[in-house]
Image (cartoon, rainbow, N blue to C red; front, side, top):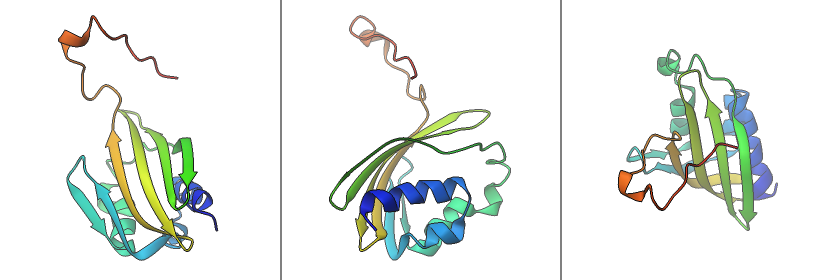
Length: 133
């Protein structure tokens, strides 16, 4: 399967909470990095555990959907931008996925919430507010 389709299916399966299906797309020794929180997830089993952890069920009770905003591919590299709205906040992620032989072998994901890092006042004369699409 081509890399773009592998990653598109990943997000579809994450939205469906199809963890067995997600596992089928992740290499056993995949490495997923989250620089914003300073974490590295090593291995398929850990990736599934982090994303499906029942201990976080209360925190994720208001999850609605995963909206794939953008997906681009160049060879084995796939870049996605997703939005995950929740009752209390909207999460956005830009992810850089590496796919080999139909499996995700690595990624680096940057998660944040729009407005989480307020602009400094000194830039006000040079910028305008970004209006959500």
